Image (cartoon, rainbow, N blue to C red; front, side, top):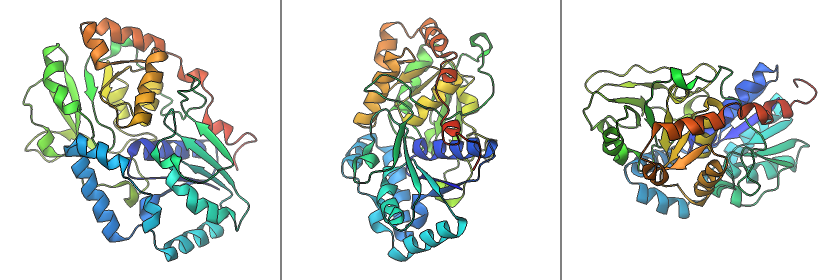
Length: 350
């Protein structure tokens, strides 16, 4: 039994964990996902939900909040940890894959009572804030390494073939990660003026502010939170005044179906966004990063020839030819990176 440990405060951490669990199950392994926030008391969850809305609406506030963030484990009641340990014992969990470093103090307590394997999987190219605390796992794996300029491992998002450039819609996908953070909504007018149609991921119906037939809005169900179930985020087309119908992806998050048919993704450089780019061969146009770790993500993707900053693209006339060059650099790149699900099961499923 493999336990995948994620956190719901970032879909760029949580969704790769869901993907890994699916890929492990496809290989015949037993895999389960636990989200850290499920251990929190209701009042702490209410605060987390309020922060999500505030950070979406004000990116400057989000940047300040990141600098003063504390480990949510500090708010977990001791009896909830004891209950979790009893559950792991009962299910005979022998291996853990950790996507949020905030889990490491919990695992230190558990490994003191039982011999298990722990692998810390870092989605970003340098340690993100959650991995800068205490805790020494048995092994560490990075999906991207800015220091070495390489991709050491990956998690397949989808086995579907990458969409050829000629078959893509030519539109740009704008998003701000799982919490909808960043300046992407401020770029709608400029990118429309550059001649592109747009798909914009909203997080509130009020985000659909530009009434233009060249702008399509999509919505992650604002009532859904990652700690409520093990499914991918409910996702649907947002049409103001019309009830939104949500659907979940089969084997991957539904928004990836937009990524793989787009000419580029315009976003802050989150680790989950890099993973989507790699497996779709869709280039990234980078906006302002959410912290130093995302800045390093951007630098790595540019060095590999997979992405460009918005300022750099502007200097090249926001040309579609530039995006096509980046797309061709990405083609086949995912196939050259070791599959983490395979590496975790070297002798077959267990």
